[in-house]
Length: 408
Ligand SMILES: Nc1ncnc2c1ncn2[C@@H]1O[C@H](COP(=O)(O)OP(=O)(O)OP(=O)(O)O)[C@@H](O)[C@H]1O
Image (cartoon, rainbow, N blue to C red; front, side, top):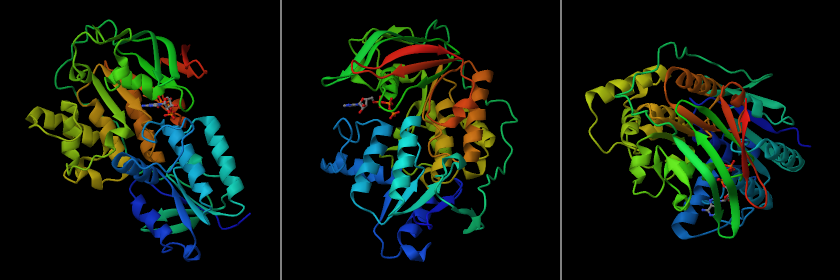
């Protein structure tokens, strides 16, 4: 096995894109100059998905032979790794390698990379300490703008957080709903392939749920049924915020009751909006601000930014923030209006160790200090810091995943 595999542990304050570029060009490690270097990263997936959407060009085969843009988060990553390995790289940069993967896939991919490491240099870029690949012995950490070799990875948590109460809502929602979401024997299939079968599940006001299941089990599918983004919801026995689905409600009637965070929200987003405007857009269920906010809304948005320690960045272009900070802003954006239901789809992907702690505290705080119900999807470890009341578990089968409530 090569001895020169390297791990670079960075925080979200660093410009990861620039760091990755400096590895690719050999500026950071001279021994990589001239090697065929490939990148396993969300950045590469973004590029392939863009090509797919723009030019109908498919280079990567997913397990169910569907488009990358239609495959689940975990399926995409596994397909990308398989494709990159088939290209016989001499060096592979792996960036936040385990995000979006269920625990079985994390183990399988760790093993695959270890085997690959016999003939290929692996450079791991990571923002979460627990994701360090065990066969990598050269550890570096970013310090004062340069990488420093270290014996052990250390997290720098440099700011205090969440001493204040949650910022107040603009107005109280009508929370007379007895039930926010009610699935009654809901079954969904794509083409001939059943995805979920006979789902019967209810989310009540103030509940705190975690939705779990392996990659491809149908978690995001259930979420899009709730957010009004999946046309397959029509014809199903689904009651959302007191109204039967398909009874003349608009998508906006549904979205008005929901704060939603998913990394997918930003795909294709190119507008030049400030951090403050991005936060304010949460009042209007849009991504980016298209309306004039009120003074009260501005006041509330500032309160959220202060609580996250991001107030000083409010006038900066949102897209110039590190990915981790973008995600914290988007999570708070989903919460500014104190919606009856907050949906967080794999929110800790792309966060660093410090931000993941902030995030977990924030979610527990929202659960204990507001009337908002939370539905949270994650394969990541902070599930153990979070304190959901219930878990809904999807178990795949050839007839479609079945669901059951697991009491915590
Ligand atoms: N529009 C679509 N057309 C065809 N297949 C689809 C479509 N959308 C999703 N699928 C498939 O449905 C299955 C469930 O996908 P979903 O995204 O709901 O899974 P998930 O549980 O969220 O997975 P992950 O943990 O990997 O994010 C996957 O196998 C996916 O490939």
